[in-house]
Amino acid sequence: PGVPPPFISVSLTATLRLPQLRHACHCLLFAPLHVTSEVLNSITQGAKTYGIAKSFHALQEERRERAERSVLISCSPKVSEKKLLKFLSQHGNVSNCFFYQSYGVYAVVEFASKNSIVGLHESTSLPSMHHEVSVPFKSRLLTLKTNGSADQSGGSNSVEFHPQVAMPINELLQQLSAEESVDQQLSRLTSALQLTEENVSLRFLVCSLVKDVAAAFFPKCTVHPFGSSVNGFGKLGCDLDMFLDLDAASGNPKRKPSGFYLEYQMKREASERAVTQSVLSVVAESVEQFSPGCVGIQKILNARCPLVRFSHQPSGFQCDLTANNRVAMKSSELLYVFSSVDERVRGLVLAVRYWARVHGVTSSVAGAWISNFSLTALILFFLQTRGPPILPTVDQLRDLADQSDQCCVEGNDCTIVSDLSRIRLQTNTESLERLLQEFFEFYAAFPFNHMSINLRKGKEQNKPESTPLHIQNPFEATLNVSKNVNAAQLDRFVALCRESAWFLQQEAGSKPATVPTGGSAQAWGLAALFLPSLAQAAGVKGRRKKKREPASERVKSLLQSISTSHSSQ
Ligand code: GTP
Ligand code: MG
Image (cartoon, rainbow, N blue to C red):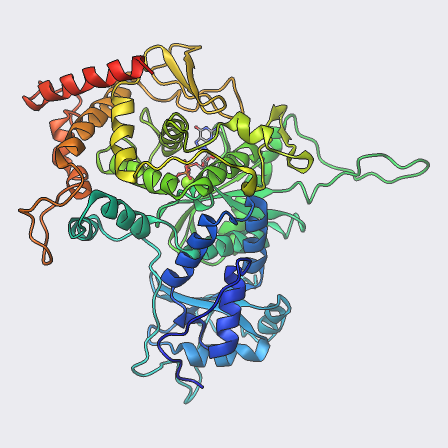
């Protein structure tokens, strides 16, 4: 007791879920942190491989509920996990706990019961102030203080910090170069970039903290993360998109009762958009005035989709809070389904997104370039066109849906199957390396000038308008998700695809014999693909196109062979 052995072996049943495993380990060893995230992630990945990934809603609801019984505690850097858990256990069982560093050390503590938070709040003191006065809003962001002789530190037993941001590019390139094949590099890249279980928990906790503020006005509201935080394609450090859902708060009985009934008196606005703007405006004020840790609040209410942007300092997340954004929530579910169908999907999306960011094809600010959402759509479409396809079409997902999946948002049919076990595709055995290579070849030769990308049908179609890039919105068929992209930006993308296809063909899959093993390896394969020199060779750095270099002749013949094989398919 007290000193857990370095390893335990656990025999798992197919239905064992992550929180249950953590709880079991906690009960057995009193040390939940000794179950490393790698072990847990490999178990969840394993579960997915065997086709038992949860439905989007079930997973979101489970995570939301866990966040509701969690607190975020700022601690001393030398904090002892054992002492902290012992101290907190007076309020109830702690089912999970992890630490991270971001402008200080924080512990995310999940209690087994929400009631524990009530007890914890009752025994929590107000901060002592000398020159200022505290705003009396009691949130679940707390500070661990010590009094008298008590000591937070655990001596030499320091806690494990879970990374919340991706490793610097130089370090990543070094790690990639030390791998033996491009396929191994791709798998290393995925595990280095993808969101960890802890990071996703922290995202749900931050949403839950923001919900507490909005709940002062709308007691039954919820705040859901959407976008890359939950769609399976998030990279450590990505922004946190939040959706303030008031529907539960403003629920309306379907039928008016006969006889007397009461109706609320309510303020009126001219449009749904105006209501969203006024709700977001008030919530933004409250977050700014009351919510500790939320800084830099900007109201961007005149955007196509009104939003409030702020930084949540304790987590380091850049947050975008929207309301009345149900289609985006549905798009996140669609992407989650795609990311769960086959593990190569996430690997390819993370690799291409990384490639696009390092070469300036995408950017963190909006503009005339391809957004991450559009780029993801391009990748998913490519996977739908493989033979046999790696991904189903959106229409196929709709056809697999049952009555409970029916969903209509603002007149658009957004129905897709939620039970992932119903999705069955013919086996495609292409390696991730091959898919990456083929992705570049596919878009190096794609007839963007007259064809449009259609994820509903999984087929290219004639372009309905003259924008350079046309990607039909899967849930709002008349909209083009990439209408912001101008011709120059599309050309950059195509040029880089061309150069990357050629480059990967030269690399041919495994580490060159000239690259030393171990030590500081020379960039090769994926690592070399991410170097800026590739973009320069493709002439995509500057605004003006560079004259083609000798390599381009070989690219040209490669392209010719690709277009011939495409037209004969
Ligand atoms: P990151 O770059 O990692 O943040 O990816 P992301 O998928 O979260 O993208 P972003 O934060 O820009 O947008 C969040 C979500 O809003 C996306 O996942 C989509 O669901 C939705 N979204 C973003 N851009 C568009 C668009 O142009 N059209 C539509 N229909 N939805 C979009
Ligand atoms: Mg995002």
